[in-house]
View 1 (tube, one colour):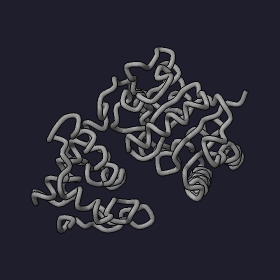
View 2: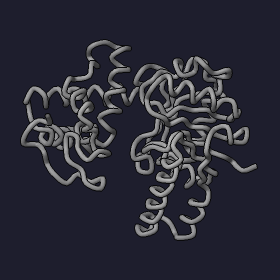
View 3: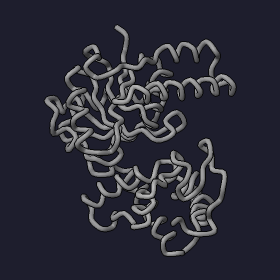
Length: 294
């Protein structure tokens, strides 16, 4: 029987997950409420495969085989039953994720997972009939380059599901860390705390975005500074996570007014071309460090 890997949500994370799963030999079925988005996602993956060929990472034949493993599916209602894996990668909203996961459970996947970066697994499992088959698989962006996946174990997650999740992570060529269920898990809780404080420092005029980032990359050997990382993740995503964590842990995760202001203005980072830096074709091209974003 062909092993099928269903990805629900064809945004940045869903596209990356689908790409990696296809490369690991799964037959990937990609679903989004907007059919144009799945087509765009598959086109993005095609570009990645071309780059992989150019860089000598894949042969043309290997890339062609991987591309053939991905297909768009119009809706969950058109999925056949019992895929090996279903990963939900829709926006970070509890109501949306709960609805999507309940619909996904109906096709009886062997493993059902959410790519949530902050919402407790127990909260998302509330509408499931078999929460023992559910866990978190928190991927990192860009999925094809980042080695880590957080495996989040809910109170109802069975030992069998835990082991299945670890097997999937290793098949994808990633390194797992297993964490207990708590808002923000390990990585988002730590990463967002650093990012929010960096945003407060910009608002207070402590230093420019570029100098704050340089301090962390050179002083602490972070591969990328917290403000550039916020641009890469998306300021709207960071805001959603901060609100989730603030509800759980209090004011230390309260979103800074500057973050709320920038999101309201549509300055979401790389995906909109402007955040704490300016971006063209996905690349940072202009240093806006002379003044705070406004």
